[in-house]
Length: 399
Image (tube, rainbow, N blue to C red; front, side, top):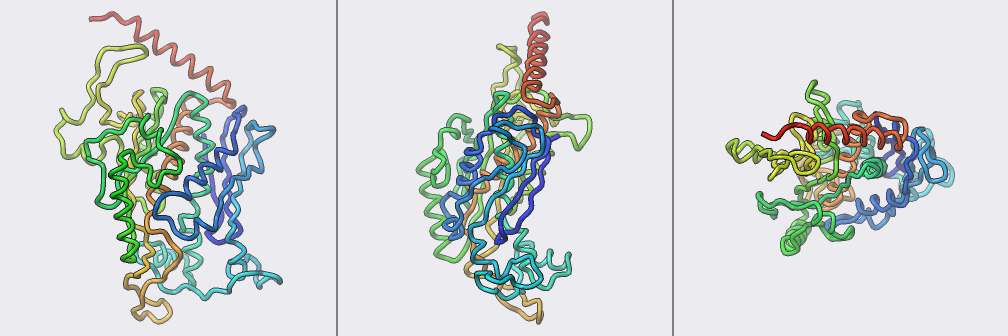
């Protein structure tokens, strides 16, 4: 129902994203898309590239007078660093007259942990530059712009979304600490790491500083929380319609994400059933009450009315200032891995991308459940369904 495609390279002219399936009648606040892009560029541990770029979203199609038309949206994000890369990244067969920047040598030393070697072998490439430019996490800026549209679709039906950093390296929140949506949402957009525990955040910052001094990198974990979602998004009837599976795939597709959890995630494998499953108590208001939410708002691949909670686990970035061992592909002799401009830690940025991917999947599931061509129709369908559920719950005799 809702889909997107991105195009662009890390040091090319810019990024483009096409978002198809956006309903008509959504009052789209484009400034909020740019605000999300700025959040993605922030966070303690980012590198020099973030001082160069100042991303803004330029909507070039699909919106008229501030409102979506039902046509595909086109969003462009300019690469300000393009001026320094024109002689390396030009599309023309020959270097255009007036091109600026250095004419950089081919990249031939693959970085362990990156797409460099596998991509060069897959596409039969001599210059790894063709791999790393597209495999770069720079592409996620386009995803964040698309996700910003999805967030506003969800908000149109009363759902809200936020995220927070759980841990950096071995410095983490206690595994039994449940962070309330309100606490995560109250974090400042420009907070260094957007961690709810300020003392722990200071320890995380110190850990990042040590890694930087060592020429090393750090990963970590983040949680995306969504509140106010309708019951019944997703389905249990086929494997590819289960919403937890769709969310896991979307978050896992973010560069450097190596694990995804729903609710308590892997902790569920270490507990007995009595410590995992959420009890169901008599209705209060619109539906039954859950004293806990270990399932993360999803049972059988379907939203159950509780907050949806998705955790992403990010590995350390593959570019190290003290490079790991590798080989030179032109000689096959040992050589240190290539060094590209990079971050020490990008977990806060990954959390923003995680928000975007979760929002896109949930907005797609919303349109699937209450399918319509306009926001007004979606609201009417949702109101009718909610009223029917409340009536069904309230008319059943109490035992």
